[in-house]
Length: 337
Image (cartoon, rainbow, N blue to C red; front, side, top):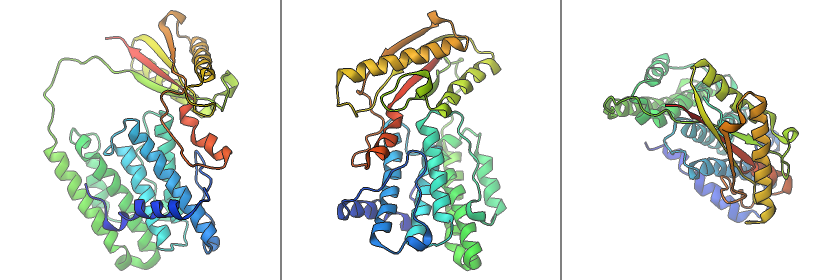
């Protein structure tokens, strides 16, 4: 699917900004705050905001580098929220829309980085955008949950975001101003329906071996204890256990893989030990939640599998937050056949 021409400048503008500015703006791990509208009048403020956009784009790229397909619904939606935010920012939109759209992008990024499952599919009307074209919303909704959704998910995600974008523009200068974005949404809905119809449906097969449930437990920098775990990351474990109980699935075993970030130096032996201690901590946590010790095995890989690079991010506090997804223990709940 080809995104709107007006969005194609994003990567070029961000690259130019990186080359022109030696000042790296803060890259918050969970939310990037743009400068207040009235402060977007200096080169320094604008450069800082563009560095925030660049860092957010880098996190989406890192998710793709880690194996999440570009056409994935949530990755696509995070990208499209980022695109419309940047588009309106560069058009000097002084409303809350650029910030709120950017925040929606980062909510999805955090959910993907931390292994949330399932990730919500709702599409909030940010900045009180007007609800336009119920017919298009209903057509997109109808594709969710169908076999063809796997082929159409990118167009569905971006169509939903563009409808919100159009509603925001309608509030500002009525229908004439929103018309180009309604047209984009119409095209995306048509594309989504065509891709869903053409999507090859795999023949029915014998009951496959169920795939594992996966969660990620995140640790503070250079820490490995129970109290050093980011509280929200424990929710992915609790959701997986609730799924097992709710679906009455039998647990065959659990594999833990400990990791560390690169801050102590690449390949440093200390990181091996740190990743091992983190895996051991999560092992004890699972035992405390009722999983038999003999069903849990663990591995540790130090800093050898970084999922987020964060090159050039400053200051140090922002860099540590950016590297958070690397300070993880992957938890794989293997299901019995």
